[in-house]
Length: 500
Image 1 (cartoon, rainbow, N blue to C red):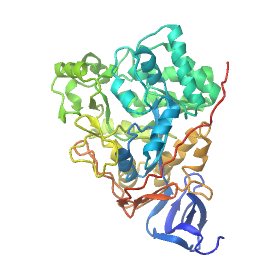
Image 2 (cartoon, one colour):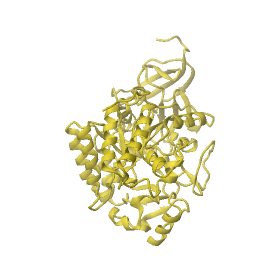
Image 3 (cartoon, rainbow, N blue to C red):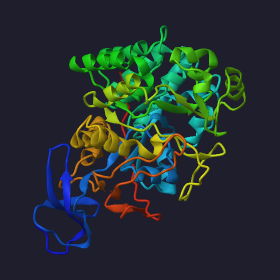
Image 4 (cartoon, rainbow, N blue to C red):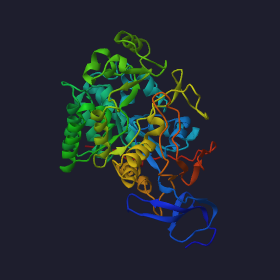
């Protein structure tokens, strides 16, 4: 035991819940130099003491799928219990520059990136200038050339750029295949081979996520499984809820059977029936919507704050403003037969919880910089504000669909374990144990709840009393610590070339 007063911070009397060991007990937690250094049943003393009586002390949540890599978006996520927010589906390039930009600006939460296949293609096929920010991918997802079939020679150049990103320490390979479904199949297989060589995961938005064949959700996930079989790579299926839709049961059955065969396939979900992406996406074309089981009038135009009125209007917006965001109402959460599909994804073994959060925007421009509170006219998707509190409040406390410990495991330990081989520092996150990073949340299990709605997406979650990132308060006594920017990079090691 350390001498009295030696701890930087002590959390007293909290219900300590650690999903890896199963510890669930009232104890006192001592924190020094950004690390958990004591968990004891006897009272501890420290330079600062917070009474957590009646509250849960748990590992901070790790979001594998967070596009809103901005200070204001991360602040919103802190109220939802997130301590690490990673851009792994779209990724970034150049990797060194991406980390440099984030570190220079400062981040409230830990941050990190995969190597972006889409940005490699945009750079080579559309001459897009890469600057290490998320804005480039968002602005060019609807571009006409990057998502098409290309020559084998050009494809090799794409792979070389991605490989360079992996060598520079990317956490994995981000593959927005659903935005470029006509791209080279052999190129996707080569990406899986690349991931296997460097022992990093791929994070795939599957090629097809349609309600009907051809191009069904089954075809999309089958391609991922085939690559895993042939290469042995760790293949992660992004947001299984919004790329499976009404095929949820079948897709989850495929993933489950593949896992039981020993394949390294993981997945994630967010607890909403609507998704959000650019209106210029391939699958958002008016003629493609019947394959998704929706119509143009099921799309909310985020940039204008109103619903799309017709297929003709959608076509016009896509032509003039392809980077504008839309909310797509795929599943009706008020219908029991559709709500049960989301519940199946949530209860599917080892599914991580992730948000797919895009940055909040005003008049179509993403919010950046030292902004707080968010302007009243800021727009976005409620998953950017309330994903985790929604799970804890609605699906744990109110409905009892999963236990509190299991929900904590899906939000912290599971994503940490998905990344541990590629980023060994993740072995110290997603846990409340001596020696772990002090990425800790303190919340009230009786009041934790999301408030954000599709109509009011900028309402913070409630019930999150304290959020520590590397031992520093980002949320303290339910209020934002505005000057706090303690986020650190989550990054793989520099990797030498790995030849076939």
